[in-house]
View 1 (tube, rainbow, N blue to C red):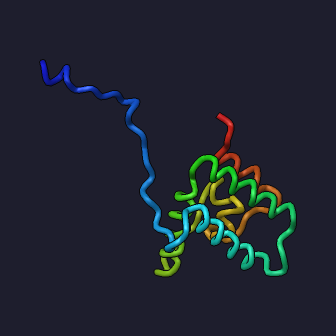
View 2: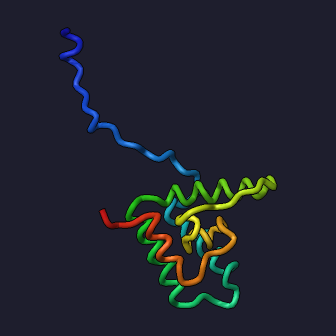
View 3: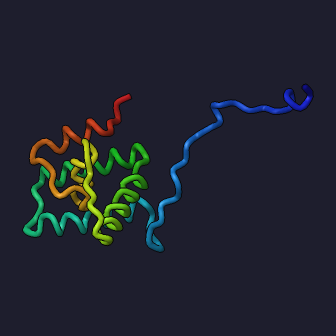
Length: 128
């Protein structure tokens, strides 16, 4: 019984920590995600991006940062890139895959025009 009384532990101490995401030397998950998104913007919109679409991407990036989900998006990007490189059929599904950020990361082949913000906010939201 002495051993049991000396152990102090609470389930409140448990916290999930996402595994460390590998990023290129000199970059952080934030800077790497931004770099990939900017590359995607140039690829997806070679003639220039509309201001409302850019605003939507920026809004999503802020929410992703606020909720500490950068590494999740980088992981999905890595998985999709690997699968496509190996010619493995891969397709995003659901609201997250319809985000503008995922579209820039080439995760889904398309995003429905005008519905992206609505769909993304069904996936993650700052509201409790």
